[in-house]
Image (cartoon, rainbow, N blue to C red):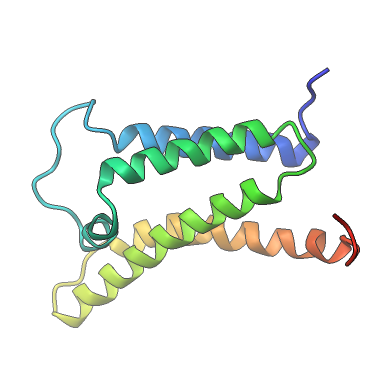
Length: 137
């Protein structure tokens, strides 16, 4: 029988739905594609197109949802934290750049919505990582 991995699984299921929804939101299927992007989003889209990032968000979301039913969920949490940290860092760079040129933006808000949860997940993962024996597979 398939069972949710307790509170960790429930949290990962919510995170997976969040990632999936974010990915779908970045697909150009729900309206116009903006002509100008905030600096952070422009930076992240210079690495990979927004549509590719949408696919990555969707894949991470599906992975999180699937791993919500397993005790082997570290990779899903790592991918979630990684993508959120990457996007948060891009928005941080965009925000600091806007301050540097004298045109402060509100990218700090986007930065905090990515980095805040990523930091919380990382902090909550430390005790679990320490409990795993060194010779565990």
